[in-house]
Length: 62
Image 1 (cartoon, rainbow, N blue to C red):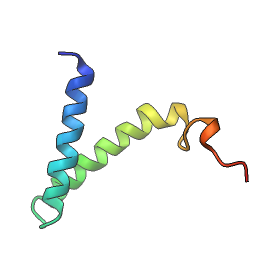
Image 2 (image 1 turned 90 degrees about the horizontal axis):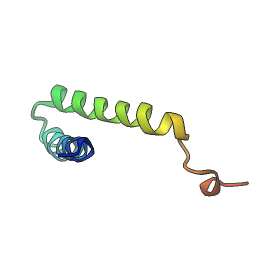
Image 3 (image 1 turned 90 degrees about the vertical axis):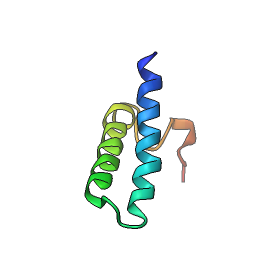
Image 4 (image 1 turned 30 degrees about the horizontal axis):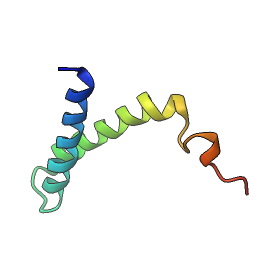
């Protein structure tokens, strides 16, 4: 299995089950930690090198 599939599956499961756990207040600290780690990985591995607002054509000129 390609690592991309594994990480995409892990990210999807964290978002689904972490969000579902946060709604009724079950396991709030572990769910919040998992979601925070997921967002930090996304920020540092994808958004930091490429910019946070998307490609230059997607930014507003106003």
